Image (cartoon, helix red, strand yellow):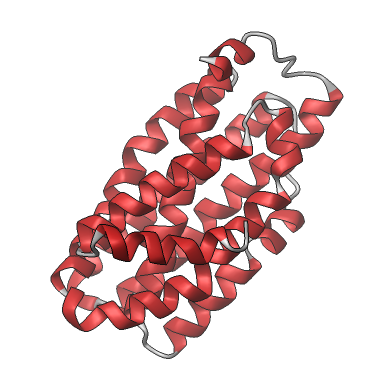
Length: 231
């Protein structure tokens, strides 16, 4: 309840808030842009699922426009250069995997890591958001669960042959999440979003996704440790 209470005390128009928001808003805009492009790429790698992936891509495009409107509502210009650098590690790893035809790695990065990261961030943000952004973000979160669900279903159906690559992709990419969270810790706190809450929510979302795919509780603890070592 602390976060809910904090929301009523935030000055959404203070210079400190708007400065921090310029980076956080840019991150969610760029995150939706990355997701849109990633789903288009996945549609090329999984042509049998092209219709579903094209639909997900279009949803991400709508989300991006919604978050751009959130910035305009507070008269904030998003720092997109910062956001592109913020996503550079995951972006590069996704592109390399796509070039190599590693569908499993691409799905882990986009459908699990990025989607769980987004859901966690939006869940923690909603109670402390301004009224306009709250309505936009609540709508987006509902969509993100369906995006997560696509990756879970595909990876569950291919779990036996995908498990080794999933473990390798997790080892390579999960530590990037903690680096990203550290990078925005101060800005998130200005928005009344605590890093500990973000970490906890991400771990819950990511752990549930790994469980749904077929990993055991022991597996999940081991896989999660790669991220925590970097935290």
